[in-house]
Length: 423
Image (tube, rainbow, N blue to C red; front, side, top):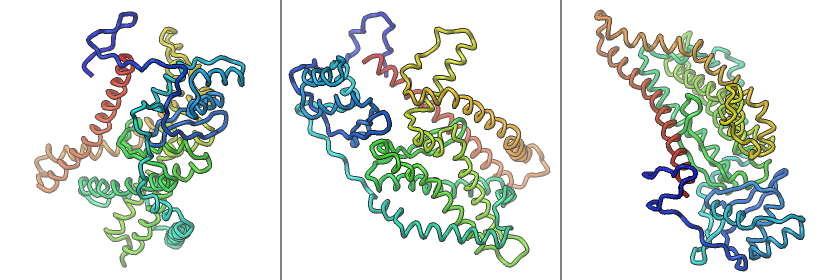
């Protein structure tokens, strides 16, 4: 956006096009798109499934929206609200909020129709009773193999299945990408079987690069139906882990140790296990975090927690003018965030400690070994030099890509703030 926001207190810049909402006619019905309503706890989720725009309103606010959507004029809706609840309502602000959410429409605007949900039949088949029996059989078979032959249990040492670092890195990368897609496809299909759209995007959590599946429409279904779409990705990881163990067993060979193919399978299985374990790092908004917030009925626990932590930081520095208002947070978020904030700090501290004392030494050793191949003139094997080039290049990409995505998301948030100020 080329125009900066006007300074507080200054009149708007006339050179900037100021969007103006049409004036509100209190005696004319407000045209609205089809909306869904879901009572959940103390709130009601109201929204459009075709655009995935939702708002959580108190029951009286949701009733006011219903009256407007049913054809009542703003004046009539305000009068009904006063008679039922004994309080007046700023109907102009309410209609303005509905416009901002995209719930209203103009007279010449067609009524939005929800787009068709692709792969809905496949989603139902993937989570049918027959499919669950197959999943249980696969996991039970893998467990039986591990009990019979404990040497088939994946270990960290299985990750180093080649003396060439780039071979390990590239192999894991080429296999992990389809496994991540498998994980996210289970999320998407579990949601689409309920008629919920989904989108997949790259993002980051702390210093981790992640792939996200957005299922915003889950807020329109009863809470008990949300758990499977949330946990479906972890189910996919368990199935992949079981399949890799069985494949390693089939390729084990006749020698005392595993064959090269079996060790590759075990290495990939261990990487899959660590990714499954990573889901329990709920403080960085993993699947377990989404499950917890759904169970306790939070709206944006992470956002509330970050606001609480920032306020504690500014209080510690005795800078009260930097505090932000916490009263606007959802009551459940605000109550849980006060103690959840300490778990977030502890989780980040553990992540940093694990990286510094466990992962960093191994990583530094591999990087130093790759660099030494260029410094040590006695080790001029072209294949090893090429191995070092590929490994260092992939390592750089793994650091640069999350940083680039973080900067892009920060720029997008800043652009949205500028747009809001200008508007």
